[in-house]
Image (tube, rainbow, N blue to C red; front, side, top):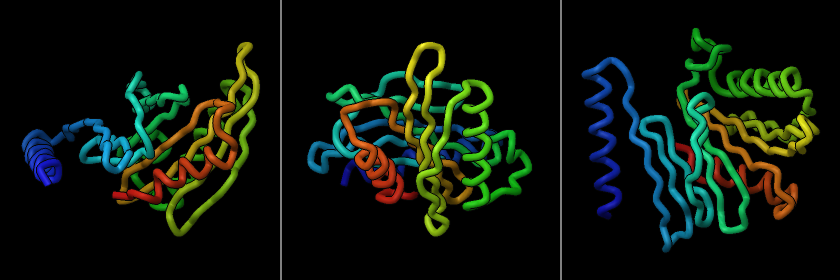
Amino acid sequence: MERRRIYWILVVIVLLTSCATQRVSTIVGCDYDNKKNVTNYFVLPYGSVDIPNKWERTTYNSTSKQQFFTNDEKVIIAVSFGPCNKYEFNADNSKKGFDFVKTFYKWDSEYFATDYGLNQELIEENVADNYIVWRVYGEYNNSSWDTYFLFGEKGGYSKSFSVMATEKWTREQKINFLKEMYIKKQD
């Protein structure tokens, strides 16, 4: 109960600060819930996610707004939230819902193909829940790439989850993990 109260106090602070400054302030946090066995990561007001099991925050990429995490198996994932109109392909905010997700996928997959010569595989499109699961793979600069992504949109905010190259999880485990994070808690 105390955690919920703190959460709402933080939301009110963010909203009041946003109104006063005309720019959006964010509150970022990460907390492991031992009882539920989930790691809750949030970037208020953009979104939050319950990541199954215990994860530790590692690096943050300020360009892509990706927060990286690792678990005790040394699997690496990344999570990113943000306003849809902050992407160069949607500065006019004309793309919404699944149209935004399709354009986001096309934009990012072309980046990996053009800049890195990597291959892409579209795995699943879900128009009803506004997400695409896809994979980028191949060789670049003497290293092997094999990353699974889920791009989604809800309420004008993008959500991007990824699982980096690992042989500790099967293809199905990677895909199910991404979908579980997105579908379990869409805020």
